[in-house]
Image (tube, rainbow, N blue to C red; front, side):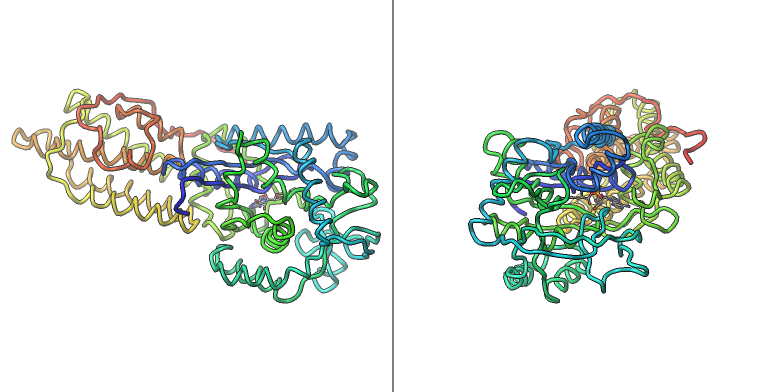
Length: 508
Ligand code: ME8
């Protein structure tokens, strides 16, 4: 990942129901990566969007009394709105109903067909519509239920087009063995490799009994299996959503998803790409589930948290911070209103917000609002900032968002300790301590500038407000702007309203 471009994706979300905190989670994590890589000076392409075909969507539309397209238009707009509210900086929003996506999927399928990787066969199996996937007997839960959703599966039998997935077993294993970091974290890599090693069945890639989908180019009575249509979005988007020469972003550097769709991304997706003769992604980062009350948040079970009230009450940066910090990236974690409030007040307001407030007020009171010059007396904080910056870069290189945020927070705490240890209010009373006071005020202002630049991917709006308050250009947020001390001395600070104000009451 040492090149100058960075292509990152989220799954494209099903438009069967409104978005919830689980979707917000992946989009926010992807946005944090995207912003961090922009800070490195890389040319970033960040893709998200909606998955709009298949039985699941057709049924949801029917239940709502709408045509599938009208239903998809309305729900897709909700996901797009969520992205805006999350301040996701995605460069494109793909919809699988986009005509250019459809045309390219058909072209790719025709290539695979011509190469002999697609044949006609008949298949009977247990189908879970919420998953849009078949399961074999051994995978089912009690009473013929889906292992992911716990809802009943249906017996589906029809004549379909099949993809020779089984023929790719050896090539897939070779790819896994040659690229030990291609799925992270490690347990997900092992799980996916085991699925392949245990044997692969060919995949039914068309449906004859539903019509809401992309027609198979040589057999238009069948539509392409929704997962094949959906997975190719990561490729098709570059053809029309990334400007001229969009293919320069291929292959994706980082593809995010939760573990529910590991098999599709780590087994089926690379085989489809091999069949279409397209290079494989560099890395898949598989995160855990956002839980509510110990269970996965899911549209199918209705165990949901609506992100909008939290954003309305606390601001988007609070949600971004909470999710990235509370839920260890790669593991399951619980979303709770109490936990949210505790981190908001204890960390964002009391540790970061107060630090900025105190720093700006003291510079106002003791130095007429102008950040004093560096007296060269502090070496510890600059060294710590340099060290932690390297650690943050390393954390992002291993797709560990939570460690990156925790590491930046070590610096917030170091600066708070500095205030307590040096007690600038006491230095201000001692006429002989002018240089010492200059130094601590400079170190606090410069340190804060570095910290908020490092935290910018996580809390972009608050970081920009903090930079303005410190007399800095709010748009100067590259990693070189995080180098301690640049452009700080002589800048004029401005007091602002608290970054993280007290919130009365809280969402349920
Ligand atoms: O699977 N915790 O769409 P989907 C964490 N259309 N992440 C969660 C989550 C939770 N509780 N709930 C949802 C699909 N997500 C397909 C994908 S891609 C070619 C097609 C996030 O609407 C997470 O990223 O069910 C998960 O993988 C995705 O939403 C599933 O979204």
